[in-house]
Length: 581
Image: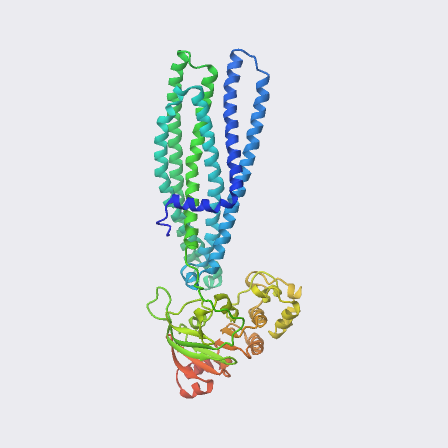
């Protein structure tokens, strides 16, 4: 169900479902807040007796202070229990929601990452789940605690003088009606604020990650202006929320002042006929004055609650999305690795033209298949179909004679090692990045052999802590060639029958390329290897070369055969030869 179609009540009911594992904590919190409200009501009632005793009998003047101290201590203790239990339960709900959301993102198909930028995902994981936590903790605490306090205060008022207290029954429906109308406005504004915040984060992320390009092309002012405009919209929306909140707060205070004035008039009449003591009058006046801030806090919490509901809508929108398809039942430990494409076509969402069109070829075990072509010809799309990051629009891909869809997704991906141009390293040690994921339990000797096979030992051994040296965020403490060799070591350790190399040497200098290419020579034998090559000199010994142009295979053959044909491949080779010269 989309956020637009989901009502506030449905969203809140779904959020309550996440609170079920913490029913005990929430029950303890509710009990603590109820007892806190009862203690507050007891203090009000005691104040009536104190006033009456002071001005009349003076029988318990030394007992009342002891009782008052006891009630104040009880109220403080019960308040502490309520605050702690509701905070712990609410934070646990937010933690569970955050973990579930992260798990969902890791199960979504690749197309989702094209539609939703990573900064927006980070906003949902961080900002939205934090708003849910605030709604679950702060707003719920205020609403429950204040509701109990209002009920207990009203109970004391009606117990002591129901005639005077009747004035509140006239004001309550008016206040409830206004709060309902304001709540819907809060929700709409908070949806817009969260979308604007995600846009701001995305702009900042793009500009800061591409800071070198921004400075080189003098785009600082343009990026700053775009970011400033998004901030301006965010401020405008936030001010609308603040004006709404303040207006409602003002209305509640005016309504409360009217109530106090009416109550004073009625109290004067009741005192004149002897139905109101000085202590009762003090109790009623104190209670009415106490009710106004309690009501104002409940109205103010509307904004926070609606922010939480809006954030929950955005989180549930992701949680309700379909996982990447995994309905295959074929279990396999290790395949031979024969890949067969049969009339495969692929198209990205929102694109009118096909990224791949009627592609057919066979890649056999122990051979190297090179895929070349101009930028945008469909090379990366082709290899992303093999691990099923994307699904073909038509045709089928066979692995050892079985359609890829027949394999369990986890089993299929265990057969594939991927080394790309942009290496993904994580903030851990070199050993952690080599023995990554399902290989985390690999013994040290296997990790060492993989490091040596990838030509990485020569720089790893010079690091301060060797294999235990941390590589920094995204491997930022290593050079490009070093990161590439760590990725190759990871692929060597996995020892998968299918190897995909996506322009693995495209961004390296000559020395780094030589070391990486030598490491790849250790990695490629006895596997089905597919190579996307930018530098054609690196694929001269490939068993077959597929030349893509506008998503179609326009030429195929060996390096020597394609040069002899004088077609697209020969033209690309000649251009690179001239550039090299």
